[in-house]
Length: 287
Length: 156
Image (tube, rainbow over the protein chains, first blue to last red):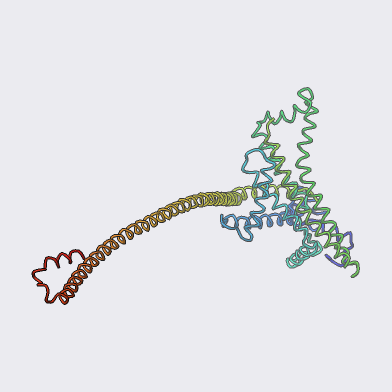
């Protein structure tokens, strides 16, 4: 538990608050001490924990794979190279199955998304109190009030992170749509179907919504799944302070939910990757 | 839960990592995989080829063995034939030689018989003469009647 003086509600809120560094209207660039302060910062604030973990995990992924790529032998692969090759092969076959165009960015993009989202989701399996408590200790060592050190370890439960990636995919979709079909071709795709040229306003509304819904659904699906999963972990963690019998039951529940969650985190990573491939494939298709 | 500049940070990080992966991770891995695929395919093809060649070699060897067997059989047959011939020849020669020896022996025996006969004749003659001499010791002159005696001898 984060602290004995917290109520259950405070505990949950504490766990769902990001560590925020931003430009506060009254105090300038500071770490937010309370959720209210974080809110007052408005847009110009960074979730240090989400960004830090997501970049750290991406670096782990990048250097692990880079090491294998550098020493990749064409002989009999061993150990970690085997594992990496398995993932690469899996991503490659997914791309070949869903993407009909020729674009060298799609396969690396899919690999990055799959591995990165998977690793970010994987942080969900770390018991919910471990890393926040460590962060509180470190914060206290730097002179901060431990109760005001917020720390969220699962980047994919932060909508900023999921929307950040989904918008990245969205820009790529727009870029390749315009590059392949030209501005007029892309506009025609939005305006002249399904009702023909006479129904242009209706077409624009329909196609516009379907276009915007792609990144939104991509981001919200991942965020929703992971946020719900994390909330359940937090609720289970609450049981540990309610006596040994309930705590034991909570332990069993946590184990069960964690095992089930392995499926969810892999599935969400896979869905994000597959939808990215499909969306980019649609961007490459000419009518 | 607030939407803030984290969004921008994450988007930038996203593009940077995608670019890194595209530049430094994906190409070498795919190259290694493709190369291994090719190596394996080549190996399989070589194995197939080797198998085919072995089959051919086995067929050729079988053919050679068959030819050799045929030749051996032929040689054996010829040898047998020749052996029979030699035996036959030897038999003929032996028979001829035996005949010759037999003829020579017969001739010699005939000669001996004749000689013995002559000898016997002369002895009988001399015995007869001796007998007659004894009987006619005094009655006949040997020299005077020698022509009669010779005549007798010739008649024996």
